[in-house]
Length: 238
Image (cartoon, rainbow, N blue to C red; front, side, top):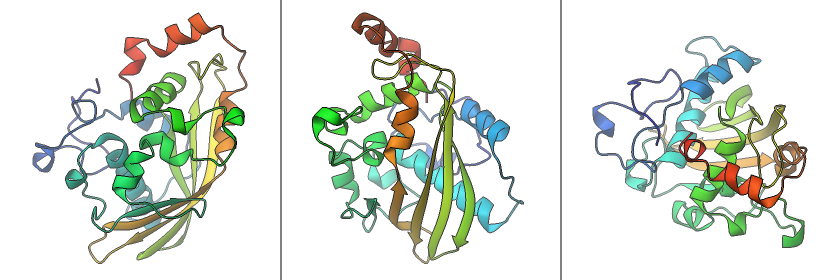
């Protein structure tokens, strides 16, 4: 399970403190971002000035991502307005939080595809929020870092370019670890209300950019892949 020894996070709010004492966490306690924060600080290409629009947007996105992945009760979300929130990927029809949950939540939300199933290296239709979490935290034991590269407009309609990256230090879907960096670039739009609560999110990404980097390793036999993906230590990271 994620540990909760750290009582503050430099980049995320609504994670610790009195306001979160009754929060329902997916893995029992608040996630610990020490490893991914270190990865971020060592690998970022931009260091935004304190208090700048870019820093504020970057921290908002990190907070939003944390709540989407780790809080199980919509009423515990504080970065978004749960009643009015919608999410859209690559111009698809926007979905509500409840509809998003039915898609599998987590990574599945970002990896929707219209590819025929036989061509899907990763098939979100067959994954749950927990199985996808295991798959990606196994492949990226130090996590996937996020940085905002540019902000094109500020609130109420925030438009920004971002970069995700991590090192494939574990297997993924029958492919051996490569130890190489895997990167994903994209654009996103966050609309916020007068209280700075997110009400609409749109992402524009190429899922093949992420999955292609995870399929470069040698093919593992079934027993090796299964042993790696069921490791109890890796199951609890993230």
